[in-house]
Amino acid sequence: MRPRHEIEDLDSPAQDGTRASSAQTAPLASSEILRFSFDYCRSVARSRARNFYYAVRLLPREKRDAICVIYTFMRHADDLCDEPWATPGAIDDWRDALENALKGRFDAHPCWPALHATVNRYQIPHELFSKLIDGVSGDQEHRRFRTFDDLYGYCYNVASVVGLATIRVLGSDSPTAIMLAEKCGIAFQLTNILRDIREDLECNRMYLPLEDLERFEVTEDDLRQGLPNPKLISLMAFEADRARRFYNEALPLIPLVDRESRRCLRGLIMIYSQLLERIEQQGYDVFSQRVQLSRWEKTFIALSSFR
Image: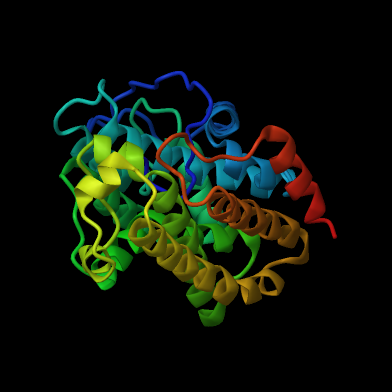
């Protein structure tokens, strides 16, 4: 399973097997190294974050680059827990490399100089990056969540922390904005959980709360078979309604960020909301095919955010 902060993998990405090492080999980056680092992060986001990148393109260059840096760090952390080329202990090495990079000491991975510069420029709390690693590390296990409160903690670590880092770049760190950004991340994550039920079960991971399955008398075998029935549809509708409530609660975040950032945030919310709506329109059939938006649809939605 992919961590959900859209982190989306809808293209065929080039696998980056670079392994972070605890050995520190570089001081603070020169301007040339820094340019290369930002170029690298930009290329990763462009090729691998298709839902996310459609809205991010609406930002001014400096902010767009900063968001690409945050994405690249989180994308690689996820890969180290999910991809076949990842070696045992690689995520722990990545955590060590993060701690050193935040102090200005970089190993060979090209994202570190840009991450160091971005964190300092936008005063992003360091612990957000550590929490993301905590969240994706748990995906190495066969996930189950007893209650929604349990699931919420996971969603916070893999999605809300992305929102909390991002709003610093978008131009707000007020207590209200922080609370709403957390809700926005939960909404995105719940949407992706619904979309990815089949793929997650193939990895023996199941993110719907067990208490919800019991409430609607749905078993994991029912989900594996993916055959529409009233109980399964009722469960899916319940989860979709929960996600929709988080979207609605997050909407007041848009006017709290910088004016030049509002189109991007509005576009992100619109794209993910439309993905949830597509799931509903298809009768919650996320089992026979992957539910997604076309390039044209995402472009149209992003351009609509200007209104």
